[in-house]
Image 1: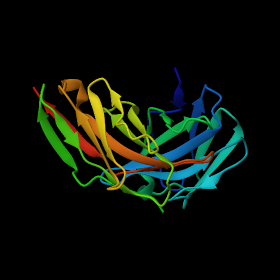
Image 2: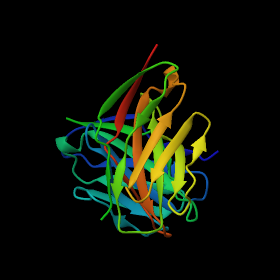
Image 3: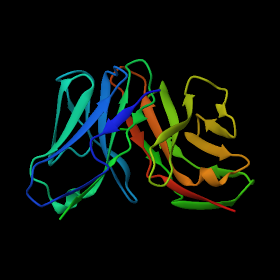
Image 4: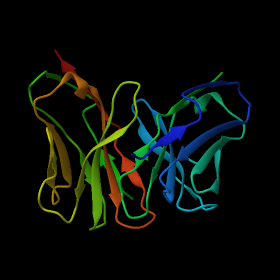
Length: 112
Length: 115
């Protein structure tokens, strides 16, 4: 079974803090994704990566950056957290030749 | 640009009955995939069913089946013999064919199964 893990289920941070959200997958998948999920808005893609050190902006990259130094790990970085970044963050991965994505459990981030 | 529309925000169904969740989409691609994902309350998102656009036959997974109408760009999910464990948020998603493909999700629908 594919396993995608995220470093925290719940996180509370203060405005202006630098925040790291970590995602690890154990199936050697090339593609990894970061989404945020908000009520009434569904899932919106922040960034994705199709290989180590490669990244592409999704639909809402403003205020975020990412890092992928190893194939299994994809980090989402909030350089200076703001209250409008309070949300559920979902990580997903997939191999190149299969189109469905496998999701982690999510991190509910609250910025106060 | 791809879009996915789920126009019903909430639905409710009696246990053991059948319910259909609607989804329409728009894409200029001829080759693509469609998915339904399920997100139970406070639990992980999981794949329910997948449909390849080049296949005319509708996909089926146990109690879950789809009605894929390519010309109408419609992709509905039918849940038969609804169970309490089907209570969840359901997302429709569209992905184009290709190595660096990403998914476009609808806004989701909250399904409640009543005992």
